[in-house]
Image (cartoon, rainbow, N blue to C red; front, side):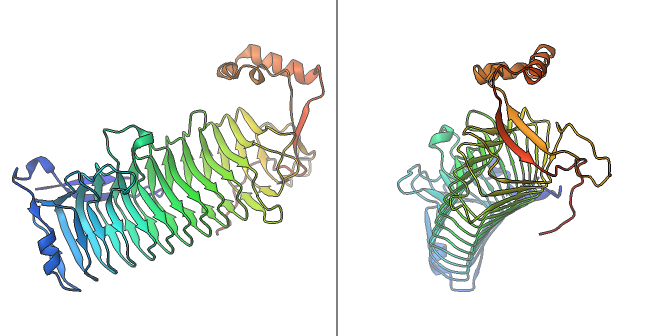
Length: 421
């Protein structure tokens, strides 16, 4: 007997299922050694595993091999090291539960370690493994429709990463669900696609480091400390993602750290401490970041500028219901290009009905804000007494307010564009 376990991985609302074993129904026998079966396999063979527990770790060196667990088989690493070492090309591992790796960060003990090209990991559940899938100096691999979690006995900081790419190109990570892992990391890796994945309850859902020309599309990331973080990584296309409930002191939907030439398009950043965090981005002023047609809502700070920064094109975004639309820790955020954004606190008219406010949108901050001195006061934001105090300080400020930004042609009513990318 098998169980069909539904996964909700896709932002389009599609439901996918993993055909996985009901483990308590498996016979309580000694695990079957799997390596002898693999050693006998020839290139192009298909190895169909029965309903049983198979013993790893195993090293697969045969190209073009298919290993199909039928949703019945479990491979255990016996808590020794990585469960499966994939040292070949064009091999497919599918319909398996992969569990019980070792716990060494030095060895990067994983459910599957990939050292080859054009391999496929499909429809597998990887659990109780320190790292999920490690793609090391390998290209054109596919990790598709897998559920990945780390060692439950460890705290989040001591867990491993759901998927780890190191010096890897042209790989696709698609339709997966990772949860209760530390991060999902992309190091020194270019031209990879991360599409229709779901990440819940992690530290970083995806962390890029020195990784250029990657595409992040259609993912959903909930309840992580950080949704996506681009560090020293350029020319990223990030489109149609939903990131929400990124909370805590470092909570942010998107972090940009010394990164340039990125396109952040048509995403939803909501219910988080910060929508987008800028830190010396763009790093090279002539390589602009384009932030366009995103919804940024219900955040403590819609955008947070850690330094005085210029070189971002911020266009046609939808800012609403944020505690502060934009926060500038430096002097101002006005050196960026602000063009035709919608701000729900715009106080103006549109007499010629062209959907462009008659007056510019201007944002100032006042030093008399109580939460500038005690952040706990933000809990009471919206209370009548604070609304009165806010009105009074704008009416008769005791000192010159700090100028944050000016959008010369703000959108009067939000009308999402139908432009496709």
